[in-house]
Length: 245
Image (cartoon, rainbow, N blue to C red):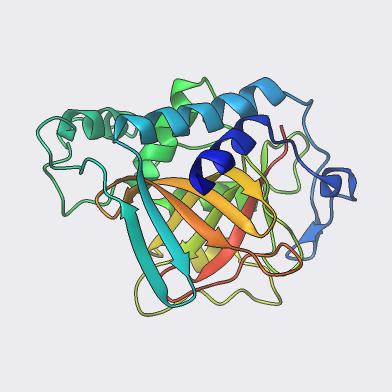
């Protein structure tokens, strides 16, 4: 019942008061003015992620501190019924020979890239890529430009909202922001993972990502009492990408 309630919240959620705050800075440079609002496109991103999650039979992952549970197991990438669906994501990043049977190739960045490309987001705003660090580098390097859809935000002073991306490091060497800011140079080749925020209620956040426990999964996360992300062993969050549409 909690998952269902959050899902309904996701579709109707709008950015909170922080959308009206000053644009702020990143790596000592001012973040550029926002683009014209396009709430319909932002909602479409959320809706498309939810549709793919439903197509993968609604796998749910709950992260609470060091504990992880999967109360609902969905379809997996290498199921014959879904391997071809993963191929659609790979095609969006120019790797049409791969599908869900190629389990050694992480496809979470391809999943997000497919959503953006399928909805007509230009490569100038979101660069389709087979690795998250590639489009994250573009977003950070161009944060001071005017009209950017996506800009970086610090996890310690920004509350994620539906439509945003939240990003974590993978592997044994977590990324360490410099003065709170992740620099583009730090991301070169870094193993990372990002999810799309689709719902928020009180101190719970719902995010959807590809290649999460072998599926398109919805993860349920705990926020702190200020609504901030809490890095956990499974997901050492280090960066939020605000969706300013």
